Image (cartoon, rainbow, N blue to C red; front, side, top):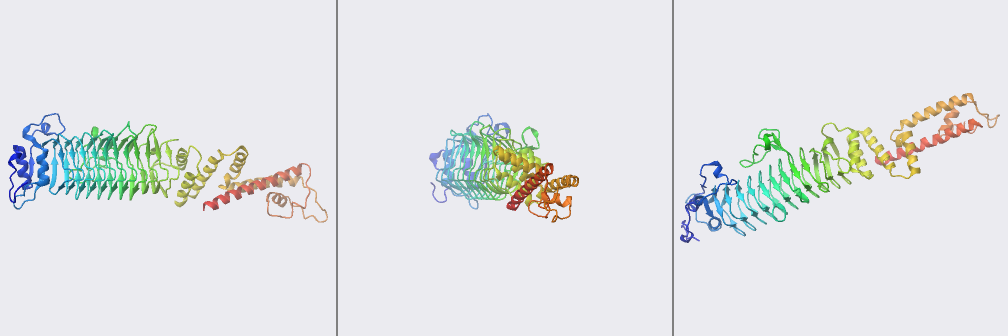
Length: 533
């Protein structure tokens, strides 16, 4: 474009005064500020029209970035443009842009077209943009879009961000396909911060990879008429996924966003915190999270056919500490976590929770979460009987040293299973439950034995049976005789030495049958316990 050492613009460009200022600032690496000093008129999202003194053509911006003039001696060229109205479409598709780019408080007449382009660092701060088309964009450093308003979606499919992607307080409306941000296959080397964001449409992060943490603190995702507000299956986050509250600086909910563009504004309605809110379904199936998935204070507003789907996710810690969804379903089928941090008020009721194949090792309840409520939690997840959730809960309690609680869970499992059995098996189950609680309370058998032994002893003391062989009969002992009838395996040489008749014969028969029932139920319960251990 220019001869070596020639920093003037080509005469045929016919630069305006605003463009000439931008040209010279580019060569100096300084900021070209086109603000007029009136906050209302300088607001890029306001209703005031911006005159010719603030307009720069997109072709001049592209010329500076793709084939700009040499810098002034001792300076580094950079495009730092503030308060400008960029006319036409800014098309940098396929270009290699080496200068640092920062556009602040700017309005764009047309969309920003960046597919296949390569930047060092690109920052667009508090700008009004019709659309950002940036599939397969590459940056060596950051991509910043904080506080921007994008009217027809952002496309970042297969983009590669060399350090951080910053979307704090951005407002993004949906495109023609109903998507606010299309970022399938996105790779971010460090943090992806989208705190206090407003997304109207589907935020799609299918197969995306984030090298450190992904933060959506205080964000509002709204797609009530679509299937999902966040669609992120096979998402990989090396550290933590934050779907939590954000608040004022120095408040308990303030975030650690990177300055100068990361500090959240005052939350709506003057509150000290702003929850993460998702209006519509959320899909995180098959995700991998290196530290945790944090849902503290999150709010999910779903229709009856929508889901918070966490199928087959893997993470060391799941913090399920948000508000209870009033509609929709929470799906944890096949998920694997180490620590489950939860509270009873966060889980949906009957029919709203599915967790077949959900595995966890340690339960860390917040607040009051007694075993009775935990059993209700399992029952809510199993409208039809399934043994796995009960066995998983019992294992977690046993690992924590709560053996009594583990037995209660397994007893509840047997009672739930009994409901599915035919009548005869159900009757046998009731008998096992009533006598020895399916073997999980074996002390009951000893109590029943003692009661029956006392009754038998008292009866046979007053009505001793005649000996079978008078010359060979042992000395009569009603205590040993009653005990011999009750014990089905041990032979005390009493039961065969005496010959009861009439009423005594029926009493002896009842004691023998009861002894066998008690022994059988105890053996069945013991075998179940041994199998679990």
